[in-house]
Image (tube, rainbow, N blue to C red):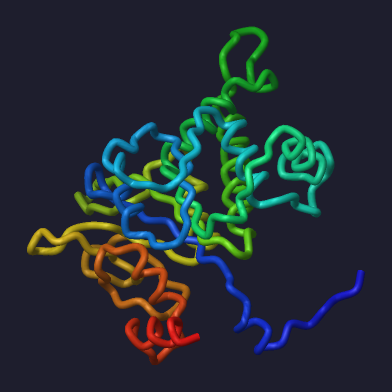
Length: 272
């Protein structure tokens, strides 16, 4: 195999996609962030919860089962050459899906996935139905083995989206508080199993918590060290601890060159 060195100039010219998760509690307005996006956006709806954005004019695809979620990730992301032909996301899997689907995903810059919490539930339900995990004598599910498959499936799904080079992938997820035996409260992604939540900061570029400030205004918490102890990470180095809860502007700020404000970057973009 012939390798190619990518120079710094070539790398800077490439439009690499941003991979992000936005976490927030019930009713904070995570789905409503769709209205703040300027780029062509496809919403993958796993929650059947788009009532809050029924006047949003973007495109949606409804997903109700884990195989559907996995197939859609393969169609959008393309084949993974490192996988065997009998595995999900392989070239064989991708080619079989292409014969049945004619959707052109190239028109969408942003893939908005609502939500990772529900995706984990669909995945775990599917895992428990796999025949190899049903114990013969008791007819019960081997839950421990099912959780192992859940972790592998969810991480494979996330990595499939993470390796899409030219699209912004925005997951949303439910944030829940947990209290330990010393009455200390911490915040975590609500999802089946624990491995997915632990691995997300290493997979995605940005981990953002959506909450409200002292005046009741919605904000994004964007840095790991923050007063509320919320889950957050900014790989770009361009975000402040708190940012306005506007997803479109947040994506623009992540992309702008260091040392420039948002208005300067927008003016240069219009001039070019």
